[in-house]
Image (cartoon, rainbow, N blue to C red):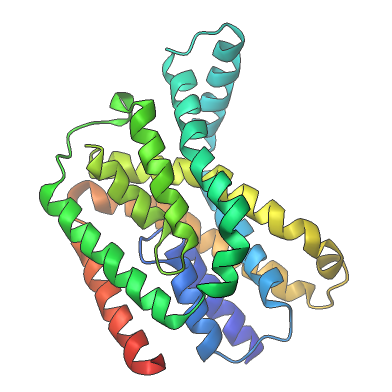
Length: 268
């Protein structure tokens, strides 16, 4: 039964980290439903997030390398107009709000807002924002049109993802569309800016858990969860980018509403 729980949680994390339906909301709910794990829950979740982090890095490896090299070379020359250098700076700016909010408010949010009611409310709120963005947002720009003000707005929206049920990818896609990005461009930027955020959050949690991880007897569970979340996450990124090119995001809004209703009826 424990391996059943591990597989379900790993698959769900791989899907929901990138599909805009809230990974934290699903994990909070499933931890309350599935048989309890014998290992530390926080340690397990860290391995899930490291798996999805590797999925992002692997899929966008060539893009990330070009951005880093372009940013590094042109930063030394104080040339910030080159496309890769410019995108690198925009990603840095977009990351700053989540870093600040995460540093000061993460523990407060995790200790006080990890409830089924909060998850249900945020599922509904962000779902409604999806419908509004699809209907009213003027989706016409590519990543080349982004300005520092645009990405600062997207970064502030990303900080809201600390609240369970919000969905980091969901709220940043909405913010990108509000900033006139095409749906696919908003999703791609959301994926690119997820790498430093997931990396930073994972490092922050791994450091105090170092001894727990090294001394853990159930290392097979950690490896299994890591591999499943990585493989599923990679496939989700690949096919979601293709899907959003020709389809609206309304289906995810309807799913969020349905899940919120299930949570309210089941738990509340």
